[in-house]
Amino acid sequence: MKSLLADEFQTVEIGYGEEERWDRQKTIKFAGNDETFLSIGIIGEELLERTPEMAKMACVLTTIRTTSGDPYFARAKFGFVCREGHWQIAAEHLVITDKNGQEL
Image (cartoon, rainbow, N blue to C red):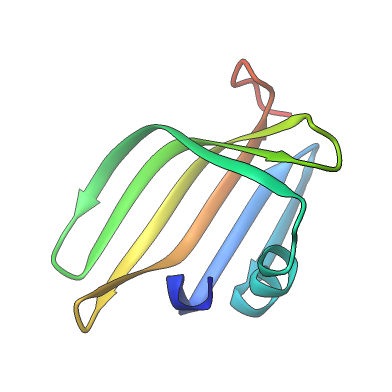
């Protein structure tokens, strides 16, 4: 996971009336060691913008964990940077939704 995230990586997660922000270090600590993930899915991906140095995409993200079995849904946008020929995630913006896409 460390090689996928740019040094400046930031994530914003909005849901249940709250906003949470994580940096690269917190994301790696939280998600990198979490063994409860069964699957992560990306649905309806759309390339919003692309240049040789950066790209933006949108999708619906689904995650299922062993702890609950209930899927987690989010509308997601990702920002990527290309450095020395390698793409990394620089930003992630998540809006938590129900299975019908309604914001929670």
